[in-house]
Length: 173
Image 1: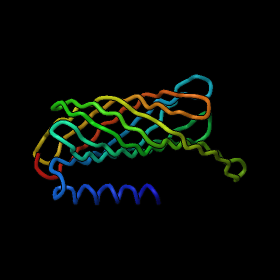
Image 2 (image 1 turned 120 degrees about the horizontal axis):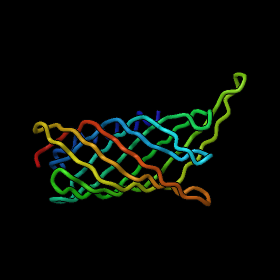
Image 3 (image 1 turned 60 degrees about the vertical axis):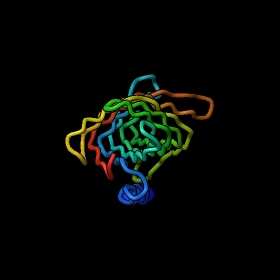
C-alpha cells in the first residue's frame, strides 16, 4: 500500500510540475542489484525503479528515487526497497547523481506454513552516472549504473545497481 501511495504522489507531482518548473522528468524502468550474500557470494535482485527529477537550474536538478527489487538470499525470499533524494548534474545526455535516504531490507521464509521474516531499515547512499537518450520531445530512454552503499549496524555494504527504462518529460526545457 505504501509503494502504491508513493508512486501515486510521484505521478501527481510530475503531472502538476509544468506549471512550477519546466523540464521535469519521470523515469520508470527495470532495476538490478547484485547484493552480497552471507557467504560472500553475490545474489541477484530484480525489480523496478521510479525517479522524479525536478530542475533547480540549467544543469542542476533534484532526484527523488523509489526502487523495489526481489531475490533469493540463502534460500529465503528477500527484497530491498529504497527511497532516496539528492542532487543531479546534467551534462547533456550524460548525468551524475548522488542520492541519500532509507534502505529497507527484508528476508523471509515459510516453514510448515509458518512465515518467518526479518526486516531492517538503514541509511543508504547511492552515487553513479547515466545516459539519457532523447527519442522525441516528450520521451526517451535511460541507462544508469550506481553503487548502493548501506550503513547497517556496525557494517557497511556496497552493492552495484543498474537500471534501464523510459523517461517522460513534462514542460519545456
